[in-house]
Image (cartoon, rainbow, N blue to C red):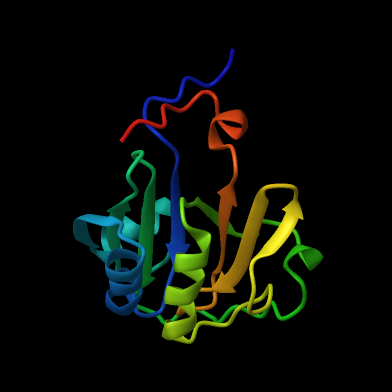
Length: 160
């Protein structure tokens, strides 16, 4: 039996400063804040997420995907990944497909975020450009622009 998914996929990101990271995703990337919930330690312990309390902010992207920022009351360890993106297993990065990558790159440069792919757009195949960078807490983000988004994702309506 295949899994029957009821809503778009959600991704959880453990963070040190939920409010600051939420500002980045809402104010700079345009996600919408859905809610912020405080989960007490007695409820959190049963989940396996943490032994203490935690806060979670739910943010939504335009197509319905959500990012959950989770801040445990005990400060989480800093990411130790310092090499190339694919030198470790597990979740590698989040991808945002955008309509104007040059404008996005200019905006992100102004924020002073670490650019992993350099200061210019990288063309990985004809008509497909990308950039990689780290968000304010070191999570890796990819931004991509396709010359023909309909060819890449014919399953998604491109009407606005």
